[in-house]
Length: 394
Image 1 (cartoon, rainbow, N blue to C red):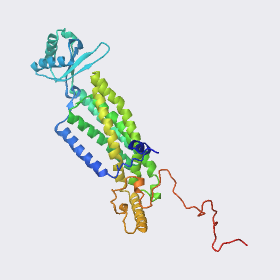
Image 2 (spheres, rainbow, N blue to C red):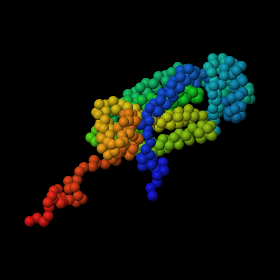
Image 3 (tube, rainbow, N blue to C red):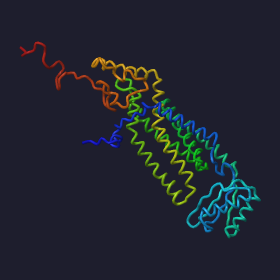
């Protein structure tokens, strides 16, 4: 007996999830989340690292105590000098570990005074404490180049998608990428994650992953909808929704496989082993990849269907499909009206199986249209069979 569980149906592409048909729900949820994200970015802003806000860093040997002890004592010293500790983390390895204290911006005299006082507090030579000053100008240069790279990336992606697929798919894919960036940035602002150059690199990295996920889904959509106007069995939305169901398990597997090593970097490397330099990169990759999977499934394909349904050819095709179903239904059961015949264009059936109403069965993907047999009987010849008034030929 064949397995009928959700996992088995997902692998066979027969889960029948109504993703495209519920596009109004996804768009509403996305609009609410975008408003929250933009509101947080505008009114709360980001927690900028010293590379963007400017500041000082002090490197203290790990032999002086634990990270919590160093942070507490350094905070007391900086408070007396009019500064404060922004972040603390343990960096280095192989016997060269040290604690890096990032503080608010200090002038040269204040930085030297803090270095001397830290040496006295920890009973070490102040020369063992390295001090550096980071200007916010460097962070501005990184941001400007990152924005330039983002614009070039989006332009090249748009050209590729138009040449590889069509302009509607390019618009839907770019919309999905932008939504991915906005939601990830909004989460950073809401939670207060620190934005560093590693964060910017991570943002640019997740764009490639999000694009890959969208292209996988759109490739299946293109396969299912190629020559769709030549038959009257499926609307464009039904074929696109079927493609999403057929590629859903592949997207899940890809996302899980990609998130496992990133999760290892984030939770094991940064969390358990204390490799603080991996935290910023691992965090943005983990959040961005998870967002990329959600947006590529719930936003890209539904928006593509909305754009394609504005095409006069697709509109005429969808009307023919619904009219054919209504005719078949009225011919077989005049007392009942077909739900598909009276439904709005957005309320499309979930799958090809659900769209096969009253005998108008949708063909499987890749199947050839069924034609009439010439004989009328299995194995018969043209004109063969019983003839009117037949009998033995004389």
